[in-house]
Image (spheres, rainbow, N blue to C red):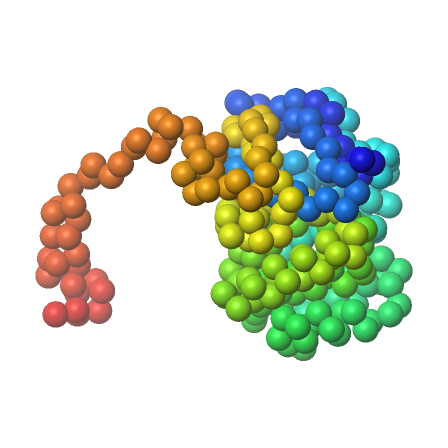
Length: 260
Ligand SMILES: Nc1ncnc2c1ncn2[C@@H]1O[C@H](COP(=O)(O)OP(=O)(O)OP(=O)(O)O)[C@@H](O)[C@H]1O
């Protein structure tokens, strides 16, 4: 199968063990792949390497055979990217932001943007600064998908979305998959990976650790792949009675607004 997304021993070394190291994997045309890892494992750094926002310390990062850093202007125009956190001027309205992204991509047809806005029940007339976390996330989703890109890089796409919107997101990714899009999707939500992906790859402390078919992602097996048996064996051993006493003390009550 023709690889569209390709990393070959890609390394971004931020020092003191932080970053990603010798990461190699490929995503074939039309595949939808989940990218799973604990907090700080290296998912976003890998996504940023693919978008050409950072230059690899060594190794190769390619989309459609093009070097993601050398060809970053073209990559950033053509790839649908949903960042972990939307970084955009917050005094813009949602609509102005979407217009800006469409202009950057050279998109003139706003039909799909309007369909997506309606599907996610997004009011784009509000200023971004006044939007709730979930509303901002919907805006990011519309921006990433509206150009019907061939390749989508989605960094924790349903973060902050309510249950109904999570379900709509899964429907959308399934439709994109049917259209033939190639998708890499990082997530902490197993149901979303199972519902949308063919397979999942795991990253642990900056190193690719394993992969699995999405249909084999049981909770216990996934936890072990993500954290290892040692971390799973650790349990809360703090003093629960001290914690509840702190909440019940008169000073705690007064600092919580006089709870009686
Ligand atoms: N610009 C940077 N400078 C220094 N260290 C960085 C930088 N960006 C990321 N890192 C480090 O690289 C590692 C991987 O971070 P990354 O953001 O990719 O994690 P993640 O898997 O996306 O985590 P999360 O699930 O919490 O979003 C972390 O140790 C992080 O502190």
